[in-house]
Image (cartoon, rainbow over all chains, first blue to last red; front, side, top):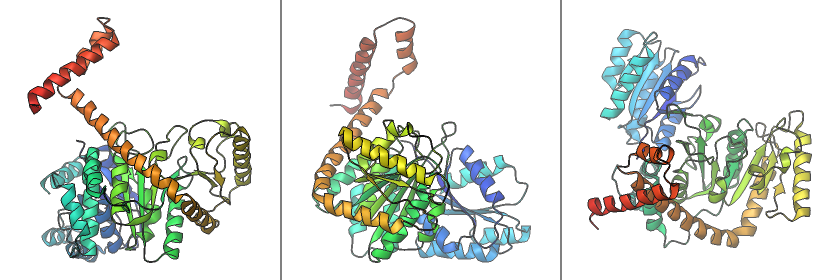
Length: 132
Length: 331
């Protein structure tokens, strides 16, 4: 039957610049994904609980505020707490390459920094969810 | 994906399942049913002997896009939660899928994010997946899962509708039609479709100019309908501003009263709904079987180019499908 991949795009923290989050939502929509966009200024708790209720295969986090290390750590910990570690977490935004490596080591599946072509993001996300 | 629905129902019911596990299992079951809507039958079979497998109140919220359905739903959820802090309120919200890519942005939830961490609220967003009646094929199954985990009331929000998306009628006990100012003159109010299916009409965005006009047009429409004796007699709620919460308590009073008054009538209707759901699935499944291994283009050519009678081509299709089924499924 018609299995569709559902992805949640979330923006935790206090910065309200949602251009990136909306851009990626649209790109994924155009690639045939069902995107649950949860809007700006969310807590990690809200994002993770929404992801559970929506039973998404992946969570994409957009961050421009510099608080990426803390936010991703919290999100991964909450997923663990809820027994939902099968949900893939990826992210994007102004994340320095050193930090991106750190994040990947901690369990973030991919980090897309500004300038990554849309096609590359779609391909990577598609790979991530098909392996999950 | 071949997890048994019955096993999942058992897991949800199991006493040693934690709350988190129960929610996750329910969410997983919703995905299964959304991807394979026909499996609603397994769910119905699992709960059919239970009297209370149905919520006492299933509210359908429908209306044009931008009329404020999600904001209204959010406000109604808050009010229900205020009145019953022990219960669980469920929301199923449907948004359209792209006819070009099949993708979707499901954004109803944004208006309801403050309820996300409330353990007494469960929200699920669905994409219409090409279905045209205002809901998706999986909506009835997802609603049943919500009811299984005790969501009462359950609120089903349709896609933004035009005039003809009236499927919500089949799932909801009460249909609330949301209108907002600036949507057309009083002739619009005579038209069949959306305005016929409302049990409750409500004007949202009552702080905007023109709201009073819409309210009085709706009142005349309801009076006219009463004079003509045309079927369902709807109720007009007080004007609402969902954003500020004005009028919301009155609307919830009204919904609760109607639920109280109509419970025995609805019980019968729900039994009919259930039979309808199963009937739908049987026909859908049959259509699927008909399509298996059929070259639809050949059929079209036979009608268009060879001038064969439609009836004949259709009978051929059914006969051939029957043969195929015998061969493959060996009965």
